[in-house]
Image (cartoon, rainbow, N blue to C red; front, side):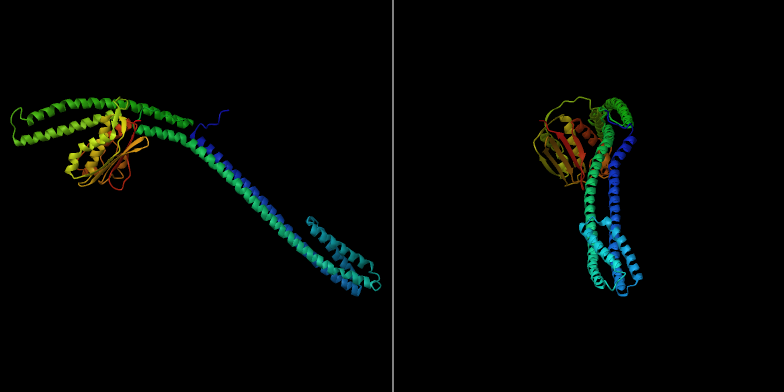
Length: 479
């Protein structure tokens, strides 16, 4: 049986909302049912308790009233008193009948039964001797003395009813605690199940989003080879197909751009070489003597030709770095020795500005292209020298982190502005601090370095810092 798979992202959201809400609605319904049951039981208990207490107190009052009337009848012997006494007796009978539902308690039932028998005996005797009270005076006195026992029984019944009320409240409290515990366990289980469903649906919802984000990141990084695949739902899958079409289109445009720049660079190099050669001939006075002003102009011409040649070479190198399908020679490289060589190449600039070097290199080897890796560290170290003030400090630390080689290059310069951090690896980008640098650059060094490091399946990152620039290079150690 195939699992249900929504055809749209909106349908997936609705499905997730429904399944996540279902346990919560179940918990709410269960809570309402439990509370309704407790409320109903509480109401019944309250009414039962009030009725029981009211009835037992009424019986006690009626017995006192009946005793008073019986004693008046014993003294006066008037039939009206006997009639009122019999009416009170009927009320007592009704009150005792009302207590029948509460007779589940054996003690209370026994007390009611005993009171009923004695009270009936008194009424029977009083009615039998009504025609000749004088003759049965002694018997009446003896019967009337039973009212003392009835009073005691009435008090016992009241106490017993109070105890029943207390027991019922205690039972209700236990029921509340039991239902509370049941509700807690039930709610906890449903909440746990809800959290599980949330995790499942977050994973389902975030999966296509992650696939799209990953595809966009790869396109942003210039990876036009890896296809953009979005599994489902259908509308996001269609979006993935559009992104993959864009990937193919960008790959085609990228190849055309590289070809175009290669042709332009080649066409620029030929006349530039002729201009530089002519400037050299003039400088060396091979075509005739020149005066000092002319020498100065020739020097400026030669210097700018060199700068233009360097810029063209950087542009070519950047495009070659982006062309990752271009094969390049790889072999074992002692990374610590390569970095030491790069630092030695910058020695003149370092000494001229009295910059302190803190270099800590752990010997290790990586598999890669020496020319590209040397360009990476040369760009990083030259940037550090460029932005470090006179008598500043540059730290280079190479260490092993598992199967990775990590090299930290940091300087004590002004650092990189927060607004510039996101664009620091963009080609031709130069931050605000570049204007203050001792040595001017083309803005291609970091872009080329990032491309070369990525060609080696490594990473080049700008780390956060309160002062100075901090760059971390990560490469795989050759096993």
